[in-house]
Image 1 (cartoon, one colour):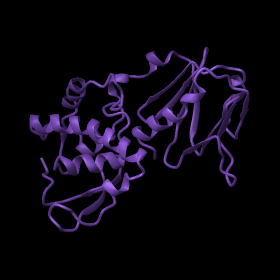
Image 2 (cartoon, helix red, strand yellow):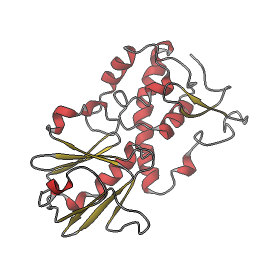
Image 3 (cartoon, one colour):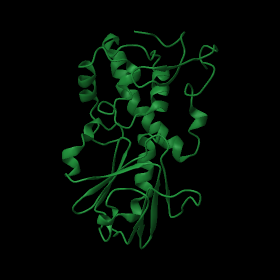
Image 4 (cartoon, one colour):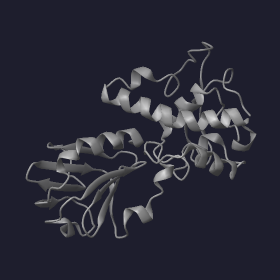
Length: 243
């Protein structure tokens, strides 16, 4: 599943289409895609894992789910796009994703302060919201898009390893400095992810995710599907403290 930093990259790659009008629509989506014919893109935005195209009277939300992807000015010859938007300067193809219309203004729909990649991100607000869910596991908290929009499983595993917190710790049990560190590193690692992804070296920087051995303790990582999300967690029973 593409995480927030990857959607920021897509937003940057799609920038040449800003102000352009849709000249061709295609794809196997069931939404009324013809509504976009002739419509001009007024803004290109992202919120967490959502890619957003804003038109004069409606917005398009693309969520890439677990296996979604995109191609700009090229296509997958072996796959039918969920949606294709053609412009006079190229096209965007979306695959294996969810596409939906949003009728309301985006500023009324999205909490931009919850997006870890946003300029509006508010760490104080994030800490306040975390204190409201003291019994939540930290592995679930990091994946809660209302708390950390854009954080996915890779970032979750890497952040918890970076700050030495066991994924089965509860939010309310974290000491105040550790709670602050959790919030800070959720954003910091997201921007590290962004830079490494652009340089095509992201996997080289993984310390915990999909790894077998702890680089600090040199013992096998534990691997389990934890929390209500049951997403894969990789963690060290020695150096990651369970609060």
